Length: 362
Image 1 (tube, rainbow, N blue to C red):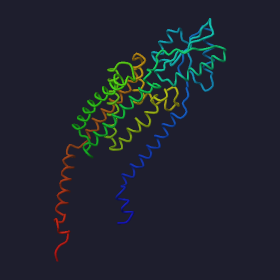
Image 2 (image 1 turned 90 degrees about the horizontal axis):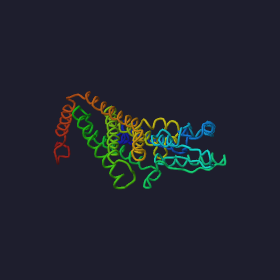
Image 3 (image 1 turned 135 degrees about the vertical axis):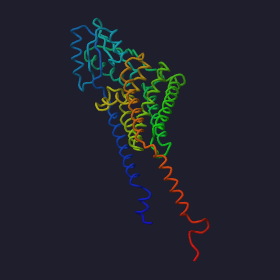
Image 4 (image 1 turned 60 degrees about the vertical axis):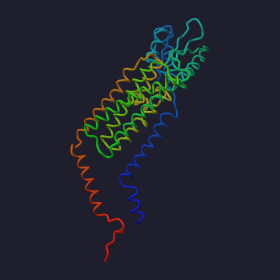
């Protein structure tokens, strides 16, 4: 057999295409992560200003005109209102100007990301210094001392996402190349739901009572985890039902390559480039990270939108999985089994008897 023949046997055209696809995913992985995270800087950070009316207008204009546009300032009526807006995740920080003294107060929320809080402190210290004023920082939603850089929420959600698409991948290939018929699709959906509940509860217990990395409701986090795992798992099953084994790669593309760097985990959304900031909230890792932080540090506020995003992925994934299973021909499995049996019987009949070496006596 020639080398070319060996090569054709070793790498089929289908395998070659899959290898090329994997190479594409690898390059996209590098481009997405490095593109999103290599040069973080705050841009259009929602920021409140509490000051006397005339001073407030001037300060808002001054902050809005900072080089690079790091802030998106707006006037807020009072310090109490500024705190409430931060806790509702409407703004990421606020400056409270003291009319009598020369020391103002900067409100931040490190629970939403310590990197962003530090960036706001640096920006406002420079601005206040140029006016011969000082600033003191008050953290109204501090990250846990055991939650370094506020990353625990992100890592928790990443773990749930990984579990979701790995479980779905295993379920899809458990029957070999057989496509999911209606009964098989229903069983896989049920298994995915049970797995999601177990994964959600397990993750919440590990990160809360066991490690103490996140405060907040354990059951709230468990419910979020179940939804994240189920939504990722079902969209993976749907993609596999639609495209076969390529669906696993598509799930990796959506969840890992596009979703993780845009989730606002390592760097909060206001510090990401425009493209990743735009897609992050619409993908499961970003929606899940936002909700996890809200549960842990912001009294569970501002979670309706992200929960609807996760629910939409779950509903679409489930609907597609079940609908695509209806195109499976009822007799396909029997035909596959019959063909396999016939091929086996033929091979057995044609094979030489043991010990004959395949030769016939002259």
